[in-house]
Amino acid sequence: MTNSIPLAQTEVCEQAHVHKDITSELRESLNEELIVGMAQMFKALSDPNRMKIAYLLQQKEELCVCDVASILNSSVATASHHLRLLKQMNITKSRKEGKNVFYSLKDHHIQMLITMTLEHQKEKNCHE
Image 1: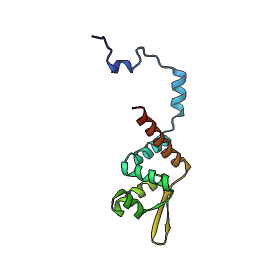
Image 2 (image 1 turned 30 degrees about the horizontal axis):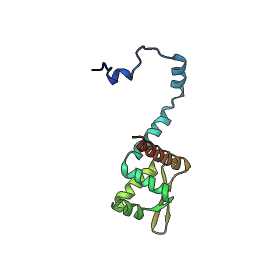
Image 3 (image 1 turned 60 degrees about the vertical axis):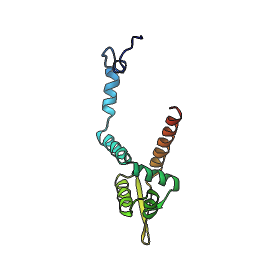
């Protein structure tokens, strides 16, 4: 029988010592408004359907609401709701062409975020 230390004990410092120079500098670098905005962006993408939409827009660059609804097997109203929320969070942008509304990812930062997240997930799955 092996003598093992509970996992919870191995993930905390055994000796409390705060590195004041580091923690002071980092505390000052926190911008609450930016952090909240970042959290809201991830919250918007935490819904699987909205992440699917972002992934689809990463693949095709631009899709109309009807196409998104068809791919997701959802109603146009549901797809529109998700797209509108992504637009409110500055993740997507839209343009109207005749009677259709087309959506695309807002900018290259969002494209990189989706790409990096996908690559991370693929890499994680390879190592499991």
